Length: 419
Ligand code: EPZ
Image 1 (cartoon, rainbow, N blue to C red):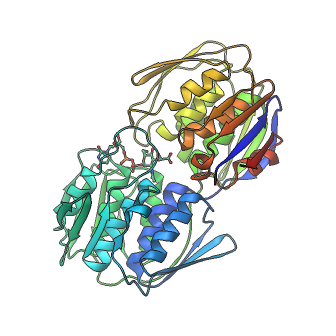
Image 2 (cartoon, rainbow, N blue to C red):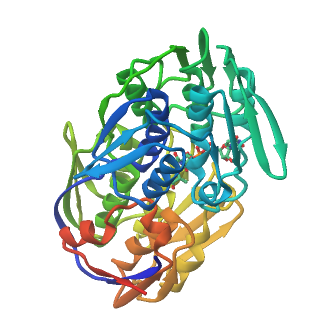
């Protein structure tokens, strides 16, 4: 469904809100349920368009998935297919994570290339090489990958880059391989730790997530489990950025502050007061931020590329200049042209964007070109004089369960209109 978010700027944010479960955690977990051949209860599962797409894939494969309040209960005992049609693959990037899981369960899989946010080239060569190292034969015919692995054998996988998705795919397939697999140069993102916790709850033997080497001892049979998804650190970064830019005093609960250290350090340097507790973050801002030192996106524990746009949006009215360097994706400044419509002074060239703070932003009509860039437009609109209309919000709905409801609860003035 397409629609608009209409934001009236100028309100300070205040209050408390619990952060939703993490999209980038729950999507690989939904793929992993296939390995259980049993029933899994996923608690705090965010109701997102991408989760709906993953449910569609599970249904297509013959599995069941149904909501029980905030929980999603998935039963993968009956699996009748091992192929995903292009129509479903195109809906999101994470559809490719089903590859490792289907191969692990069925020994074969067919799918086309995945879709997802257009952030520049997003190849899957590392995913495929990792699966080949485990013994998968892959043939591409008319854009469809035909993968067969009658027997997966544990192996040493060395990733050329610490790709999040390739690490997840390798781990999922390795859970069903004969013997031990090590994944070196693995991504260290917290979402990999959440996947490990989920797999261990299903009876798998996975160790080392959060470090650069993950070890998996394959098992013949796994079982169902009950798991609570970790908090979404990028949604948390979005709301912190919103309050930093508008000014105010908010507390986010059910978050893990350690997952957000680079973001909170940046906002602190900009002049916000941050108080960390075990599972909450309080941010106080007078709305008069200053520019900060170079922000370079990097794999975790570096500054997250997914938070680049929203933190940039918080700094548009800051005193001074901030330079961003986007190292993860080639095309992740699509929000910049839209921010300029609101009166922002941001220039970008290649991987570098320079924000020079302006006195005031004003409302405008803008369009979300991707998920986090769209959220950044909302964060900017909250600081503008007058009304901002953000269009093509289906991008935002892929990752935020209720951005309008959450920010309204924090005192912002915004509403969603379906068109
Ligand atoms: C995950 O994408 C996240 N998505 C992204 O979040 C996030 O931006 C990204 O990790 C980096 O943190 C999910 O977890 C569902 P990568 P992923 O493989 O796994 C290159 C959001 O907004 N690469 O770590 O696709 C790639 O082109 C989304 O929530 C290859 O060259 O990211 C990129 O430059 C957007 N070959 C770099 O590695 C490959 O086979 C990192 O990508 C795979 C990746």
